[in-house]
Amino acid sequence: MLKNDNNNYKFSIDKFYKNYLKGPRIFNNRDALEPSYIPHELPHRDVQIKDIAEKTACALFGNAPPSFLCYGQTGTGKTATIRYISQKLAQQNTEIKPWWIYINCNVVSTPYRILAHIYNTISREEKIPPTGLPKDIIFKKLLGLLDSKVRNSICFLVLDEIDILIEKKGGNEILYDLTRLNENLDQCKTSLIGISNKLKFRKTLDPRILSSLGEEHIVFPSYDAGELRDILNKRAKIAFREIVLKEDVIPLCAALAAKEHGDARKALQLLRKAGELAERAQSKSVNSKYVERAHDDLEKDHIMEYIKGMPLQAQLVLTAVYLISKYSPDHIIISGDIYEVHSEIKGFIPGIRQLTKRRISDYISELTLAGIISAEVKSMGHYGRTKIIKLDIEIDIIEKVLSEIDKIQAILNHKPTLLQTDKVKLKNNIFKKLI
DNA sequence: TATCCACAGGAAATCAGGGTGT
DNA sequence: ACACCCTGATTTCCTGTGGATA
Image (cartoon, rainbow, N blue to C red):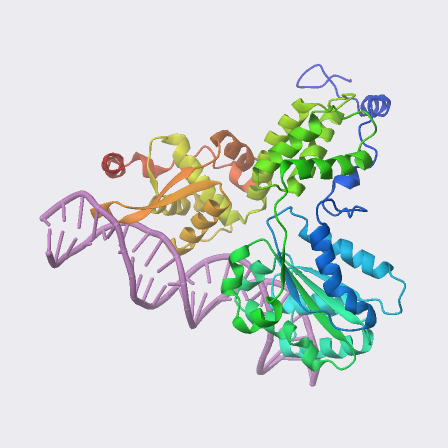
């Protein structure tokens, strides 16, 4: 009765939990390694903290602080510093408590939603619906709300990943509107704080915005390995139980993350993942082997998650690349091939429409940007100008992810008819010589 | 040397699907 | 029911282009 059909082994969940509880414990407080955790001190960010504190201090007297920008690559502590300051500001014993509205422009990605998000964060009762109203109405409502609710205080609007907002249409307009909020407010003041990881994004900024937002900016340099070690040490003390970390673990995490432009978030992720792997292996301690495995895993996890999160059409485009590489590894893949194969396989999936070449071209660009494939524009003379496309990731990994997507799973063994025509084979031979 | 292929990739328009207030 | 709003995905239309070939 207990016998499993596939093999003689049966997983006993009760036994598992029993062992788990008896087993060694690694973590004390794993939250300390989460990106959302705000530590009591931020090592190596004194200059920035001082700068921002000086800029924003006047909020405590009800004066409007200047708007400013924070630059720095991912994981250099921009967001953490802002959150830290907001916390400290709130702890001061004054009558005026500034409001902080945090907006991640990658999540709250359209002008309408930004206004709605600000409104809904301030207003407890009346919420603005996720869509439907005209923007200018919301803008007026927001002004009214700010004057009544934030009365005599300051409202900080933190726009994280502001560069993404600018790239979109309407991004400059909404930003301009936000910088001009104060002109329309009587009872309160607002202050904008932009956070960006691209230094060059100022060039695409509307000059009117630049004058009010871009005059002052604070740069967050990347951490070096030594600084990362300090950060990790502080967090590890909170996160892990004593003595579980072997002494080479933190230096290794720091070194690996330092290679990637000194990304502290990555370093912390690495440390956490290593701890989790050790825990799962019922190990008493975390050693460098786990860090190395965590490093590999994180790369893969990241890519796999990304692929799973893509729209189905994008997944199909990737499937097209996969199928060609699988059945004809030496085939030189060009955009037209992807289009053909996509048109073919889309027929096997209900509810999927035919796409134009233009759209496919966009998906190819997206996949390239994500580092999943590489595409190089090349002119093949009389055979036109196109992109030469290659998978940038081991094909096994791609296969694994795609097979986990229900709708696509069924077509993974479909050999594209394109590869079987003599015309294509001939053309491919010419391409080989041209490259 | 002119030609011409097979696209690249920008800009604007369109469509469908979520909503609104009246 | 109606006129209208916002968004994201896609289409339509378009101009541009590197280099092998005739």
